[in-house]
Amino acid sequence: MIHFWKAGVVIIGNEILIGRVLDTNSQKVARALTMMGYEVLEIRKVKDDVDAIAKALKELLYEANVVVTTGGLGPTYDDVTAEALAYALGLPLEINQKARDMIERKVREMRLEMTKERLKMAVMPSTSKPIPNPVGVAPGIYIKFGNKKIFALPGVPAEAEAMLDYVISELENDSLLRRAEACERLENVREADIADIIRKVAKMYPDSYIKTHPGLEGNRPYVKVCVLASDESSEMAHRKAKNILNLIISEVMGA
Amino acid sequence: MIHFWKAGVVIIGNEILIGRVLDTNSQKVARALTMMGYEVLEIRKVKDDVDAIAKALKELLYEANVVVTTGGLGPTYDDVTAEALAYALGLPLEINQKARDMIERKVREMRLEMTKERLKMAVMPSTSKPIPNPVGVAPGIYIKFGNKKIFALPGVPAEAEAMLDYVISELENDSLLRRAEACERLENVREADIADIIRKVAKMYPDSYIKTHPGLEGNRPYVKVCVLASDESSEMAHRKAKNILNLIISEVMGA
Image (cartoon, rainbow over all chains, first blue to last red; front, side, top):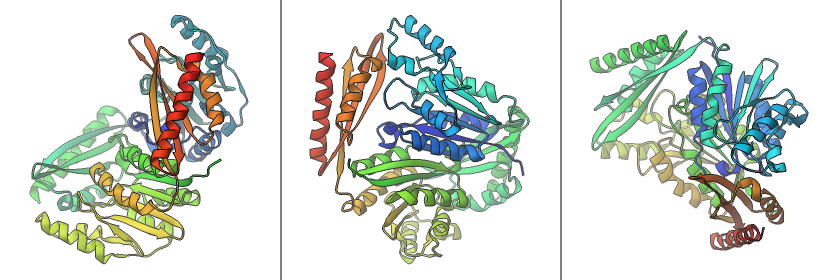
């Protein structure tokens, strides 16, 4: 049984917990980590609250090699992710000179003024590396903590997404596995009717993840079958996923 | 300071953690609970795994009065939510006769066969009340556990949404507060420029939640300001939110 490197995701923001905003960041982050060979153990959405964020970070870091957070890096009073990181890791907060330079450059480019609210975005736990934000002003925060890596990205989806490349490049040489997925829609089939076959094939390939998604088109039922497989490279993982999927299809055809 | 009743949400499904599927259930559930006067403490997304689900349930139930889960109620081998509920609460699993009747009726209506996979959806922790599923086959599970209430809904978004009405009606007489929201877009304003005003008003109304969402339209910046307020009824809460929002607007205008 393969042991994947473990990851956790923390989505920070009251607007998520009151359901005003649909969180799309967790899917993007989870997808990227999964394809890099990580097993995402848990996604937690917590309030803009130092204790709640720090608790989630500490609990996830207990098992996870990597934790990625989004949200809480902006200029407003309720952006407390840097403080929560410092508290959770026992690191002092300080003005990060590189982050300050990044913010000042952005502020000049956008012909804005440097306010104390904007300067606040340069306050990070000591040992932080600021992550350049190609879209907005707030830099992300990267902290290596022992053998763990923590990445804090902004909550604005376009910014978080743009900074995921940085995360991926920092993880490139950690997990030696990659994952890939293959899906196929089987027509005129019901989920319950092929459950036995799926269970059998899933037992044969415990390192792959097979999932069925039932649906209806008019009166005709269908099942989308997806296989997520892992191997040394994305290409090899994709080939493996295809092979398992083909085995399922031939079993269903023969049933 | 008002103490809201507390709620937790658990979204169950590997397809969420590998980022294949965008979870929209947590937003819908969190929104409904919020408007019923609950404070959603945390949303956790966990794998289709008995231990992971049971751990999330137990940890959230420690603080929350209500926990709503979605996912893991279907006929396939990886649907283990009923088992996890039983394990977390220390209740035996049994075939729930009412749930079985619901499933049999649905299966007849849809001209399907009763398989052991479909029968599995009637297996619930003892003391469960099955929640009718107006859209699909799998009944939901409602458990009163001491002074806590647990609702397990299916993962298919149309089914989960249809069953939210049941949850709401069961909570009607618990929390005596309701919440409502008012939002307004302020043009030609930047988030950092009004951060001070927002902080000041937020301090004046600690029971309300004020949040700014910055944006750009072409070159013109805007900030959407939202106020979530609570009161005895939805109408009174809405009036309060409007009043606070108007105060912010007049402060910004005067600044």
